[in-house]
Length: 349
Image 1 (cartoon, rainbow, N blue to C red):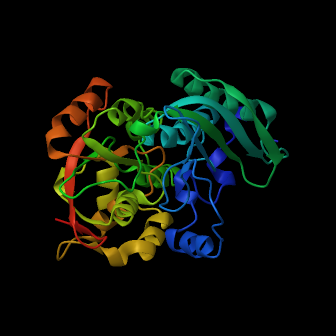
Image 2: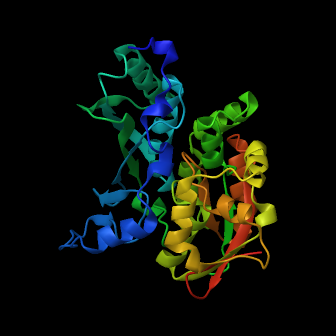
């Protein structure tokens, strides 16, 4: 067996991070065959709008937010993998406007291939992020499997009056993105050995930054909807807002924030297979500028792992939302477009 320091976690997985999500078209087909039975009135958010978490009302001022997220390695370093996976799982709670309470670990490892000290480093990385979020990992479940997976079940708490869904945006809302794009492209370059040390650090900085502004933004009356950008890419998750809210959207490509090396790699043709699967799933609902290069399309569909919050807010709340992002260290948060009345489509200018 290889020494722990020689293990490359990505060699054990066919796809890394949120790039290993089931393609949106396939997921829609699967969910279409799943019956939705009578739901309790206390279930404020279920699976009906592809939102980030389920929400169950306890009383007039408290609701439980529940989510789970896990995936295969996106990086080789076990501690970094644990940190990224935990940050990604916690993001769904912040995207609903909630504060996390505690987490449960979800662990699947090929025990004959990965030494126990390496697995321990993965768990330590996840625990370090939960400590940063101020919550414990209170238990979990582990199995012996062919590919390594790690993630969390996270429970959070929100006042139902502050709950932010992906289906409550309004016409004329401004769209604000909290983190730069390009994580999927960087992970693809990493797997090919083409990512620089600076690019790796930039990817790590983005994927391990907790989306903590979500809780503060939820208390702003001008913030109408939120989600986080993950495996379906910016275009896919924005279209979920459009479908849930019954609106159309427009974004400016030139206003999108990108991790610089990801932008350069995209121009060179680096992309993930998940980017193409995403486009095949929802590309019919995206209008690109005439003559737009293929690399721009692949950036719009690039699967993000632990991506940024996507916020829909009233125009007069725009500055306050950007100020809150800046206050919490999200220097690249940017207003990228707007929502309008019309069919659930995305137009890119």
